[in-house]
Amino acid sequence: MIQRLGLAFRILLPDQYLRIDTAPFGEKRAGFRGKTILSAVKELGRTTVPPDRLKDQILQSERTRMLQLLLGAAAMVPQTLSIIQKQFTGASRTRAISVYGAALSVGGVTGQVLGGVLVDLNIGHTAWRGVFFVNVPVGAVAVLLAVRKLPADADVKGRIRDGLDLVGLVTGSAAVLLLVLPLVLGREQRWPPWTFVALAGGVVLAVVFVRAERGVADRGGRPLLDLEVVRSPGLPSALIALAAGMVAYGAFLFVFAYHLQSGLGESPIRTGLTFAPAGAAFGLVGFFWRRLPTAWHPSLPVVGFAGAAIGYLLVGLGLHDGSKGGIWLVPLMAMLGAFMGASFSPLLTHGLVRVPPARAADASGLLTTVLQLSLVLGVTVFGDVFLSLSGHIGSHPSAVAFGTVLLALCAVSVAGLLGAVPLSRSVRRAVRAAA
Image (cartoon, rainbow, N blue to C red; front, side):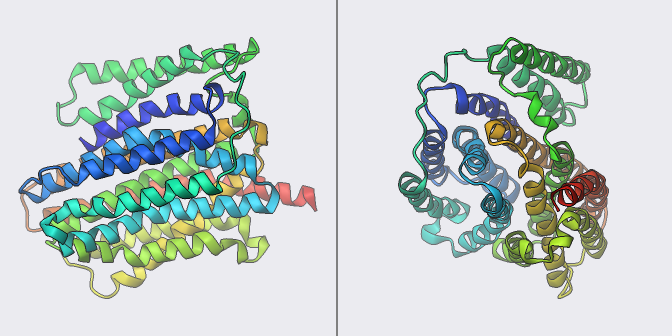
C-alpha cells in the first residue's frame, strides 16, 4: 500500500508542476493549498482505527502518510525550489539551496526520532496515531508563515494563453504508471506477463513524451517540461547522482526501521533514537558545508557518496549476525549521516546554481520528480527484497536480509559516485573560467 499511494503521488506531480506556470495561480498559492491539505489529512490519520500487529501498524500508518503526500505534497513540493530559484541569486541562492537540502533530508530522519518518542509516550492511549497530533499545529504555523513571509505571486493573467500541455501530461503520467506499477505489484503477483508488457509500453510512452515535448517547444508553445533545461551545466550529472542517492536513502530508512522493530524487537523510541546521530550529522554538514575551504566544494559530492557507500557496508556487516550493534553503532551512524550531508546539499547546489531563472520551474519540477520517484523506487524495490528475504527460515532471517540490502545500497551509492564525478569536473571548470 505504501508503494501504491506513493505511485499515485508521483503521477500527480506532473499535473501540479504544469500548473505552476500555466494555471491562474502562482507558486505561493499552490504551496499554501498544499500545506493546508497536508495538515488536514494528518488530522484524519490520527483517528484511524489501529491494527493489532506491528506490521499492520506500520503499513496503516504509512498509508495515511502517503495519502498526505498524494493530496497535499503533490501541490506543495514542486513550488519550493521554484521559489528559491526565482527569488535568490548568487551566494544567497547557494545558501538557500543548502538550507533546503539539509531540511529536506534531515526531516526524514527527524521524523523517525520524534515518531518513536510519541509512540512510546502513548499520549491519550493513541499508540502510533499520536504522531499525527504534532503535525497539525506545525502545519498551521507553516501556513501562517507562508502567508506572512513568502513573496506575493506575480500577475498570473495570461499564463494560460498557450493552453495546457495535455499531451505531455497524459503521456508523461502514463509512462510513469506503466514503468513503476510492475515494480510495485510484480513480486506479489509472481511477475505475470502483463508486468513485462507494461514495462515495454512505459518505455515507448517515455519516448513519445520526449518527442511530444520537443514538438510543443518547436511550435512556440509551453511544454510540460522544457527539455532545454537538461542542457544546463551540471544538471544531468546531478540528476543521475541524486537518483542513486535518494534510492539508497529511502530504502535505508525503511529497511533499518523495520529491522530494528520487527527483527530485533526494539521499541519505537529506541528505533527513532538510533537514527538521531545520523540526522544530527546530516543537518550540520548539509548546512555548514559552505564554510569548508572553497577548493574542497567541487569534490564534496564525490567524497560524500564514497563515504556513504562505506557506511552502508559497515552497518550491514555489523548487524548481519542478529546483534544490535552496540556502542559502535552511534559513531558509525553519525559518520554515515555526515557523508550523506556532504553529498546531498552540495549536489543540489552545484546542479541548480547555474540554471537560468527563466527555467527555474522546469529545473525544479524535473529535480522534484527525480527525487520523489527515486524515494518511492527505493522503498518499493529494496523493501520488497528485504521482506522477501526476511521471510525465510533461519536463526536471524531479518538480519541476513538487512545485511544483503545494505550491501546492495553500497553498490547504489557507488553508482551515485560515478554520476557525481562529471559534476565535480564541471564545477571545477566553471571555477577556473570565472577566475
